[in-house]
Amino acid sequence: MECLECGEKIVGRADKKFCDDACRNSFNNKQNSDSTNLMRNINNKLRKNFRILRSINKDGKIKTTKTKLTSKGFDFDYLTQVVVYKNGAEYKFVYNQGYKFLEDDWILLVRKE
Image (cartoon, rainbow, N blue to C red; front, side, top):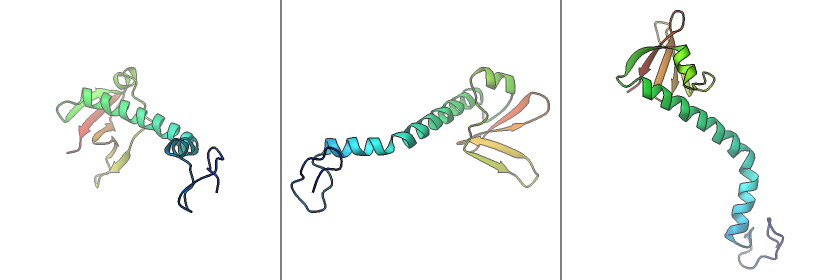
């Protein structure tokens, strides 16, 4: 049997796939690199959005403007969920920090407990 990473002969158990931990880690890192980079970039954007909302919404409910959020680097394309309540109000959430578009440039920020 040969190591899936370096091709060296494997000594040990019959079902062993790698000669050592370094080869196993290297193989798995190569396999997961594309999806890992994509997920890392998305998670970074979500964390940034969350920090922006949390820094503005310290009391749990406040009005702000879309312009203010955008100027701080908020990206409206990245969120974790959309909640539509019985009254038809649609809130978009980044983890527990939510927002709802109001008239003109205004946005209502809320925090889910």
